[in-house]
Image (cartoon, rainbow over the protein chains, first blue to last red):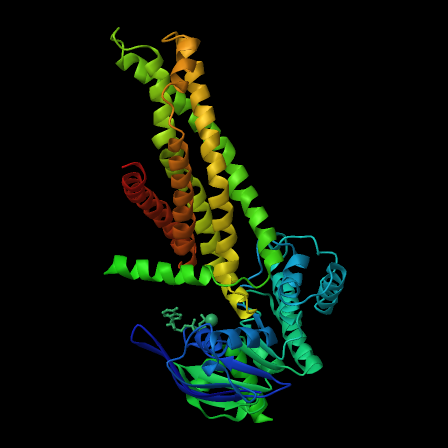
Length: 253
Length: 246
Ligand SMILES: Nc1ncnc2c1ncn2[C@@H]1O[C@H](COP(=O)(O)OP(=O)(O)OP(=O)(O)O)[C@@H](O)[C@H]1O
Ligand SMILES: [Mg+2]
């Protein structure tokens, strides 16, 4: 469980997050949706401590994360896995070395054990026979999957994904979404996903939080969305003609 | 104000760079890699510029001292002292600032804008120390070798050029490079090159580490890295010369 209470953040007098409070549940995929520039990435990075928040509190279960000292925060991060918007794989390391990196840094495992664990994670995300390739040599979808493998290498309790399927075709996006959901249930993690992909919302939105201009406009489950009369949410979700049609069809039946 | 701000943030970054490493073994491995990438890889450029500059210094000295009251061996002496005092430390450092500085700034800058640095931080790794410390250790420890190499190659280049153009005899030159030799000049040059490589590496890393945006900003950081390291080399050259030679 992760809970943020009244957090605010501004950059150079520009209020990016404005008094946000959310409860992210354990074993569920919690989605943050919103337009480009609405503050999703800043929110995610504030929760993991890459940005210092100006006010408010961030709870990881019963620990107040933002009040920890530098060292405790660092230790806490070993329980956090994060998938970045572009994958953020280390360019100069192979796929296998990328997944082994957190194990190298933080465990006393032997080389063989580390390799075995890395391969386990890679197999979990369906990457086979690519161990010795470099990030530049694999496709965008594969990069995202390798990044997931790296994020789960240390068995994290909390998983953060920033737009896991931006730049992917709908089918590959679906694969990544289902993978995130399956892993969340399998390891009983608290997972937070940033997205503006409506397919993801419909597939994996156990809990959906809609933000605009740094404030929460709506929250609920994926099933509540069709019944919502929040006009901003409707404008955002049902922006395309196709989705509008689907909504009309669904509401008429 | 802007300058003070940069200097302040530079020192804050340095304190993070020099905090206790997570795992010595990994840092050791990274340092070896950096010695190869930043040190060994610079040998050729140092050899090439040293041989040519040694040659040019010798020929220029010869043509400027054609007065018969100047003994010929002074050509060797001048070439030697120019190389030892200024060329092999300062000029080589300025050239390496272009090569190594832009390399470091663009590598770290790319890691910043593609969120690889965030990824390290999220894992609980001190990214400043992990990325920068091995580079600093590698360049500071390797630069004295490059400096010594440059001295030898430069003096050798001078000998070839001098003998080939016939401006002096081989004996004159060899006598000259041994005449009134002050070993302390070498210590002075080695100290300078160690300090200069620290400046190049840390300043370039600072600019890379603070790149925000995209590839455009990485390019800008890389330019700033070269310009600022070169300026600081010139500044410290003055200060160190006053401190060490006066
Ligand atoms: N480091 C920073 N310094 C200053 N302003 C920033 C910084 N990071 C983000 N911002 C600003 O905060 C706002 C929100 O940005 P953010 O990256 O969170 O958007 P987003 O919702 O993730 O968008 P996208 O869907 O395009 O990724 C933007 O207006 C951006 O300019
Ligand atoms: Mg974003």
